[in-house]
Amino acid sequence: MPRLIWLSVVAAIAIAYPLLLSSPFQQRLGALVLLYAIAASAWNIVGGYAGQVSVGHVVFFGCGAYAAMGSYAKFGLSPLFGIPGGIVLAVGLAAIIGVPTLRLSGHYFSMATIAVAETMRLIVTNTDWLGAAVGLSGPTVPRNIFDLSFLSALPYYYLFLAILAITLLITWWMTNSRMGFYLRAIKDSERAARSLGAPASRTKLYAYMLSAALTSVAGALYAMMFGFVDPESGFGILISVKILIMAALGGAGLLFGPLVGAAILVPLEEISNSWLGGKGAGLTFVLYGAIIVLIARFQPGGLLSLFTRRSKPTKDTGAGHAP
Amino acid sequence: MSFVLVQVIVGGLLLGAVYALFSSGLTLVWGMMNIVNFAHGDFVMLGMYVAYVVYTLMGGGPILGAPLATLVLATVGVVVYFALIRDIMKGPMLAQILGTFGLALLLRYSVFWWFGANFLSMPPNIVGGTYAFAGLRIEASRLLAGVVALLVTLGLHLLLTRTSLGSKMLAVAEDQTAAQLMGIRPDTMQAIAWAIAAGATGLAGALIANFFYIVPTVGETLGIVAFVTVSLGGFGSVPGALVAGLLIGVIESLSGYLIGAIYKDIVVYVLFLLFLWFRPQGLMGKT
Image (cartoon, rainbow over all chains, first blue to last red; front, side, top):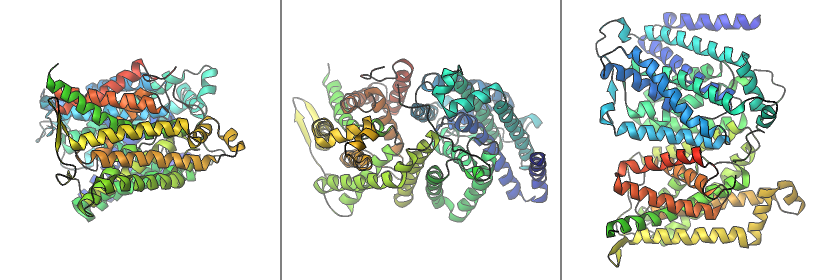
């Protein structure tokens, strides 16, 4: 029961936030927190629950963003129509990366994700049809409500809140299903899980594809809110970094970890950007790097794991050596 | 074959030797401790900046810059080993990858913050001149880098296979407990491995700084190159890294010449993915 009470309190705060703190800056900040929480929660499915550290997760974000903007810029359709296309693209890419690498040790997977994200960034930057280095823009003036182009951040806030709720529900449902059971077993010891008949590679692949699909939705939402996407905001490694650090700081493998991480880091970045201006960009990432190192060194479970009662620390015994 | 093509291949081999040099550092650490340093490319970047500072501010040449970069990076390697790696090695995979990846960001953006995002290049004529052999024209800086890198990589192989230090390191890689019972300190050996691995990146960085573009984000590309090289060569194998490094250098410069400079990185990345699909054990690895 106390869990349900906590949950309703968090939900009530989330719903009331933009009405209580209603300046445009605060509403926009709230929407951004939710947006990054969606992306980080999606990452959490593969990075936290499946224990496969995707470092190039931005590639799916970019698929969604480019599909949404492309459906407007190339076909004159609402960006919404691009979302299914983005999901198909993301899931297909996830299969290309995941099928060979998820059989190997986790390092190959991580490195392959970086290589694919870089490849996509280079290809998109040099493809004129996709706007090359300039990128693609969405509708400047909304033609109807389906263009999802609003001046105020308030509609985005509630849209993102709904999508975040769906993402967390899917994650929660997954952890309680057979798949979540397999994932926990694989993370504890892949060898033991395999020998008991758990389809390890396939389960990890499904988690990766699910994560890719949800990340692509986050990318589409991002592009709709900002009204454009370019190779850096669609496929730049720094977006990956933000997604990853939010999940890891809050707690990888915990349902609300990514939300906590986003609620801490998004305001921090906005503040440091407005204080330090352009010069702050480098410093923000120095800080991010330091935070990641400190988490890895002292609290790999993230901040939320300080509050959960865990008798034993998670350890990696399964992946072992490369083939 | 046209002269141009030979020229391109020779250029690729010389650059490939440098790839082999810094990749053998990655393969050494990976093979010995089963940990992948995601900051490896950024170590090379750091070596380039050390060389840049030595050449521009202190007025030294490569005779001073290369050993100094090696020394500085070897120190960085030892510090990183004791401050970070020793602890995350025993932790979960997530901590291992996050730890070195965070280190990469920390190094990359500290340099970015200090030196700015602009492309820097060495003052001209640090290693000047061009040699001509039988119609081939080779810049002195590239020739120096290639030859030194090749010699040092071979030396590293001899160090690991022919000396007692190498045998001790191999023993630790094989079985830590057994090595400890023989009176070898795993901690010391692993710290030495990090010093060698990082020192190799420092030297490689100082060598390519003479003709490469110097920019804080160069470490990302070089890190992937090192990873691809090690995957192709089989992890833990310095000769494998040498062959794979030379091969990647040639493939990169051939594709840069034949398809276009912007596609040379793409070719290497796609090749890497194809290898993961069809031959994940690498060129020389055993299943």
